[in-house]
Length: 340
Ligand SMILES: C[S@@+](CC[C@H](N)C(=O)[O-])C[C@H]1O[C@@H](n2cnc3c(N)ncnc32)[C@H](O)[C@@H]1O
Image (cartoon, rainbow, N blue to C red):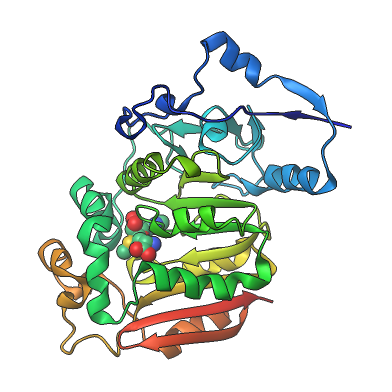
């Protein structure tokens, strides 16, 4: 016998489910506030070994982005939006607290700062723009096909094939953007939990909007986390799968990012990424390959950092990843490597 918090089903507050306020509260259960609280009281129930394992794995997952000490959590357990929204997290060593801001859990080092602010390189900052975030899944992403990207459904299937050996585990969709793949991973039923992670607040808001349009996703183990790829807020060796779609060329430091991915992966864990190959992009390097909006909004291809395949393989190897393999079509590359 074990005591667990059982969240009741998530439903929109009214029947107008597609026109919610954009606030998580609109997904709170259709009960009075008091009953809502009661719905989360701990109940004694028998839970299977597998569920107990999931609860303990989840406890070790989130870590302080400053010292990597596992965070303690107060609130309902579970990785779904509602449970995360109602939870407070704390690093007992740094005494720093983290909570959900708006629709996502903010686990950046700077979360909670009042005066300090910093800018990332333009290839990161670009995607924080509300217009870019809005347009990303509504046309921008689709133009990647010009460079050989197969498109969402095929890329998803290709990634799923690479993730087959770690099915049933936790998946991090890093630099998820508007969550076009995170949502598919969560719906697939292949993972015990999916975390959609991005540095852009507006991309995470878009992700939330898309989740709100699909009732089946609301009670899935799918959480939205804001974090910097160079400082992943997860314990070392806590994650089974990391997906990074069209992201490597946008990261401030790809080497720090891949080192972080390697750190959080368990032994045998799988990393799958896609990007544009520098050697195959239209010559001279043209931002046309990145889509029409890319041309308007990114001043030049120098905005991004593109690599040759040898460099990507070398980077994976140097960060402790093995069994490198890839699929290439024109400038598109999907690569995969495993934590040794
Ligand atoms: C081109 S989008 C890719 C979105 C999606 N994964 C896809 O396959 O289309 C690149 C994403 O990288 C994110 N990004 C840029 N810098 C980041 C950083 N330092 N940490 C985490 N994500 C970052 C951007 O916010 C953006 O959402």
